[in-house]
Length: 186
Image (tube, rainbow, N blue to C red; front, top):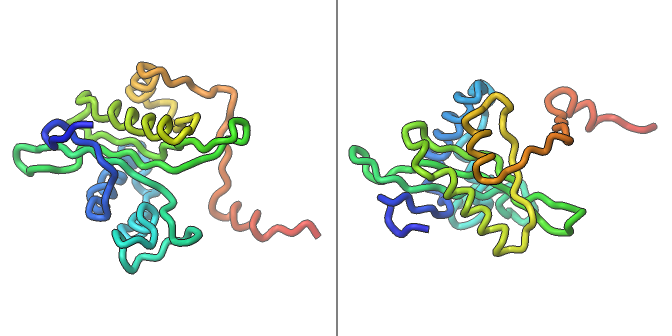
């Protein structure tokens, strides 16, 4: 990891980064044709990433013991006009494999600002998450990608990612989630 913001220093996100990370989440959702689905507020994102820690005073997390539910790494970018800004982020959380008996990292979002694509920031963020996996003994780094996002698919193939074609993602949301939660077997 680089020491200079001009070189794109990668570091864990701080509570002060939340507004800029949320703006990039909205940019990503716009690119993925889903901006209308983003409901997250700064307070929610702060609680998600920092729980009830000193970095987020007064914000209660909904996880046991107020622990963070997710984590983020950011890339500092030196912009000639604006100074140091965030050029990219990766938001992730732990998943579990009963087959390996270890945790893994699930990458929820990886975003590089459009004008900075090709800078190596995306690859370096994935390298940072791979380092987390190796250092902690995790055996997997996983994520989803939209099947129409050819630039992302090509990039992921170039770093050795393999599609999990034999698996189909399933999701229950909205009314179906409420109905399932209220269902009784009696």
